[in-house]
Length: 216
Image (tube, rainbow, N blue to C red):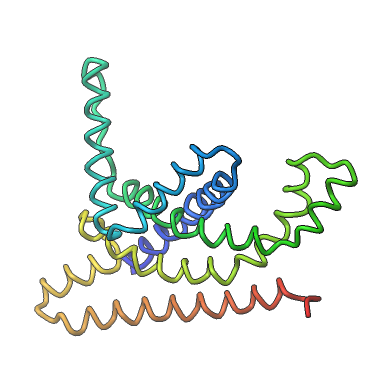
């Protein structure tokens, strides 16, 4: 149960950074500056093109190496070691941001352009148009895609077990080694993941139904 709580805590911690970062990436991809669009496209292409486990290793070891170099520059006054949980949150947030950015882009394009033109005609500046017209509708349009990414995220949290974080899969692995009953504990872990996935699907269905009230 402790491992299951760690898994859920990790997934929930990733959501604001991953989905929020994806929205920022989507907005930057809509920029009129070619360099900004090119850098964002390169970012998403890279992290969508490599295995999530490799991204986890690159960020975990790369971030630790960067911190060590910075600490050397300041005279080794403070040694900071990257926590496995924090590394997992950062790595999964980067991956989720890369994937969710495509969902946000499709959602932005789904907003009728006539609404935006009408808001500009009323004298609203670009920032207020986004906050008052576009943003309130984005969640409803993006919800199905983001819900699918959430389900994948819950399962991808098992990757942090390679960093010795005692998540659900790591706990099942340790229990199976200690008792030589791998089928039992891995089956329990599978059941927990399945319950979370089914529960997430039910919540997603409820949210979609509520968000689409009044729409034909």
